[in-house]
Image (cartoon, rainbow, N blue to C red; front, side, top):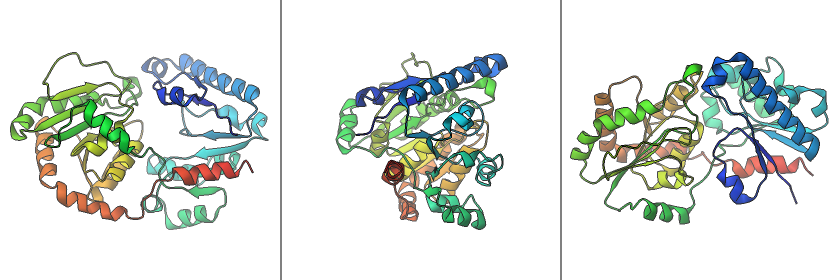
Length: 349
């Protein structure tokens, strides 16, 4: 007996259509908006107006925000007196250490506007980021919940669907390359994920010679143009795969950016990875990638040549079994979806 409506900047929201959940698409950040300060502010105001109109029409008991607290995505209007009597929940994902600590120390007092603050991370991950004193203070504060990571687990039935869809044989050595869905934002000084594909295609002929049963699936993400050139029948380009979590489970190795979701999916699948962290306005992906490398389940590739990437792939392939054993270090790691959902539902009682 709960009605839900979404406001989203995501371009790919077919899962909401499938669930029959109403949503409103907001303007998302683009290079044009980054270059044009006036256009940036207009788009932000447009989004805030859409947000306010939905709240007035919908009259919600609870608003859940899963946004970054700086820049384009945070709706400052939620700090206004209009929202004073609405219960507000913030899902506060870790960004780079400096900004994350600054927010948690409540500088700027944004957190005072939320009745619940959910940290979708494992306690062990936060221990590597926060001081013992700050983590202790959070643990004692009833507003905070350390839920564990919130992400999509693989569906066993859809794993078989992916196997048939991509004609994956049990003899194949499957490398899945993923770029995430964050776009390029060149004007925002964000590194381009497309360089990963270019480097990989440079070394593919050598890879395919050395690994006779090699199969490659490259997911470019919904923000990128299709690749028209036919490189090999053993390479498949896909713009968007909604069952990407299941595809990871089928893989022998993943090469990917180091976003929040993909890293949690790698841990869940117990799948060794080569992570190529990208600068997205902060060092978040670098911190996450090196954290997983330190745990022995991933190797980090940064600022190297295509030939160095080739060597790293061979090195990782030779050490897959050893790396898989290191997933035992995540014995206390568990999905936090239900815990976070229960926390929100309890506010309705």
